Amino acid sequence: MSFKITASMMCANYGHLAREVKLLDEGGIDSFHIDIMDGRFVPNFAMSLNDMTYIASVTKKPLDVHLMVERPYHNIDLFLKNLRKGDVVYIHPEAEYHPSTTLQKIIDAGMIPAIAINPGTSIETVMEMLVIVKRVLVMSVNPGNAGQMYLPYVGKKVKKLVDLKEELDFEVYWDGACGADKIIEFAPQGVDGFVLGTTLLFGKKKPYGDILKGIRELRF
Image (cartoon, rainbow, N blue to C red; front, side):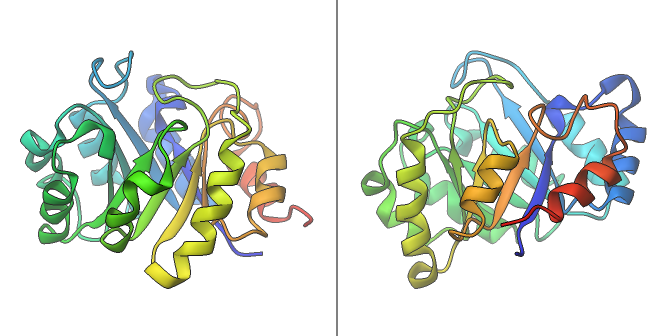
């Protein structure tokens, strides 16, 4: 069963960030998930532009940049100029007046255009954007904090997106409360990647390489 794993870096040990990136890289992580929060679109502040830029400078692995900010169009150039071609940039359609215009900026910069959709956002409201984007990040918890409870109705939304992804040419990624049970249930259904945080990857007192190897060897 083939699926990608991306590390939620807001959960990393910031006292040893360089070491965290190195160990995850060597352990076989596929990409680094960067959560940027402005304290307005979500009730929290998380990673910064400087955090993102530093991680981009010390790994060749792709970055998976999740902009949880209001009106990303106005500041997105700050992020795009510090990324590499092929990095993924998500915006929230709920946060923008004209999300397609912001997505076009991402495309023009050579990045992979993507959207993240909150648990309460229906697929019907983002259908037009599914023609533009190359990846959809499904939030299984309300965004803003790590360690939240899974909202079970999100599973039906994932199934609908998987049914659409081949026709419209996009990938489906899972973000939030992702344990082994979610990977075992949804990877066979067609989810392409999973964002891992405190539930499965960080704070386990085991080498990242061992954890990632165990995840890839899950039985379906």
